[in-house]
Length: 141
Figure 1: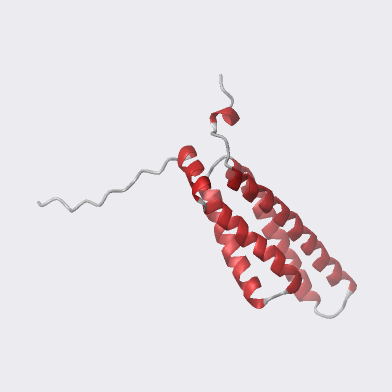
Figure 2: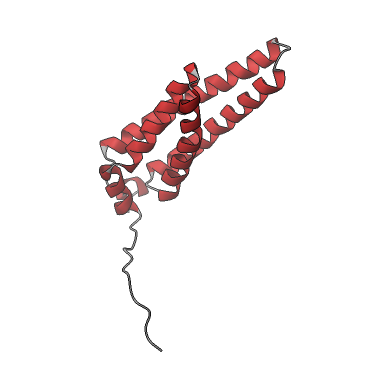
């Protein structure tokens, strides 16, 4: 009897790099969340903003960590959700130019790119084959 892990084809370097990068990003977001929550506890000014940012970054980190296992198994849905999160969170932070968070946002966008390179896409095609749709004209009645 084969284990489910041995049934998977070997992961390409691009996908392994994306997995490691998402893990690092999640840890950095947890650190940022802790920093914002600590700042909220210490300061009286902008307490609500710090609490909101801390909760948001904590939730993003937990979501990313939860999606890493399905991504590792080659699930397309995990790749699509992480791509959506990476683009929706990463692009505005890059455009705004927040110094500390721009590095994290840039890493998110690089991780998204790594997941969509041809080597990674081939891995997802092997683990969850997608039927190719052919254009067909409707049949006359």
